[in-house]
Image (tube, rainbow, N blue to C red):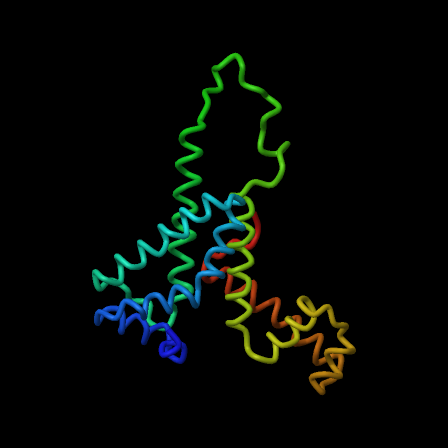
Length: 196
């Protein structure tokens, strides 16, 4: 499989479509750890994660073989989206199987969402919000993105940011202000909710 290590994801997919099954093996090898980890974090069960992982790649194979793969250059995002949808399908199925009538006498009134720990669905919503925020940050002008990342992700003071970027503290503060204004504007324009 070393002969495929220098190929891009799209090149491997093309080779697979042309009948080179080892190309898909190389693609699977390249991405399996990240996909499995993503699934496992969502379901917290290794056996279930294995099942969803296998279903994810079976679905990917079928889609590619049918010529319906169109996300050129975005294989990782595409395969993660398949896994994400399968996880949601699983939780919907479990939820539908566990519905209870509130007319039942033995329904526990203390068994309410607000009294329970964070659910996997809550975690998925939070993960989606984080993903949306990262996408919004990538849409910012470079100088605004740079200041925002240093401040919120690297926990740097505005003095440190000013020193690193070679600008005054006021300029760093201004860039941060415009970054936040632009994030809000872009989120509004695309109807992106950044709260649960």
